[in-house]
Length: 435
Image 1 (cartoon, rainbow, N blue to C red):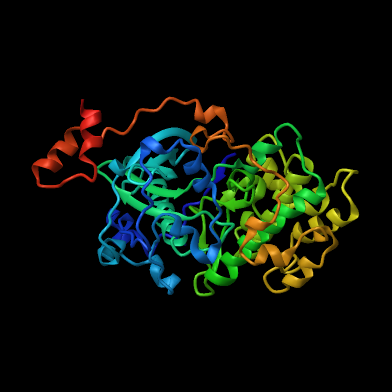
Image 2: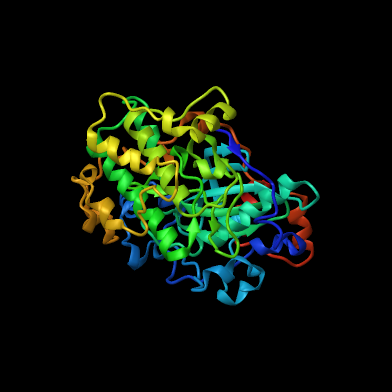
């Protein structure tokens, strides 16, 4: 689906003067020693079971690997220079520390690869971006791409929620930037609906409830507007619980700096965004209505042959919103309240959460259990089949079958680094590929 951007000064004016690629470097402070899982033993059954073992949120999911030091002052962290974070700990990851396995996804930003950390055997998703596409120049697209990368890192390192993807590491080499993210081996939620086309209302309510919890956390705890809720960003972990990914379009909300950028994916954008008006958290609740409609019917509420037709329908949503006959009155009522063109009349889930929880559409949802953070005790509607996490069975073969060239860290650039006195984390791994 096409992403629509405008390139105004809203998010960029404070950053462009001092943009520095080193802002994307920081180090990790391990909370504990890495598990001693060798890559040769990885495929043994007990190791696979260990990798799939749930980690309660407060225990913390990051403790299954290494923890990112979290600053309490989120707003100030957006403008912080992370190149000074070396004091956080001695460990600074390199690409050499990870073995590429499969392609999980591909987009305009670059590729997402399944990788294995060589020292521990743990699996991660590596999101890589070519620096050539992020060169700071007069090209507004390049500047926006750079800012998206900085925003995503800055926001994700603050997150600690079971329904939002975890960021473990961020680093760079001479030609690419890398984000090492939680590997969500359940794949895309909508990948599991390919055969059924749409969900029952009981099953859909479970995943919609988890989206609500993730969005409320971003709004009320971090002050972040997500701005990119769409099916592609709704993933499942190994237990079948929903996890939001991709925070490149997210933004910290501020009364002094109101949002008005035309940002998002056309089918899921709120009317106030399309009209160029100032907007706030309510745009995410409109997007929730669109994704809920998609879950329940098999397509978003407003469709068309091109973005202009879709946007025209959204702006005139009052007359264009139509429901299939098979939706219950409870489902229709919830969707009407979320897909309210006037944001002031839209359901205020941030301000009146109880109103949503008590809505009959969610009568099957155990909110206390989901809110507790320990969602491993809940049986989700979809249980992903995972015989071996390395196989990436729940990802589209369109991506997993793609050939890719393993990153050759031993090229001329690495030789130059050796000459200059730099050393690599895993010399044997380097020698294996050199040979």
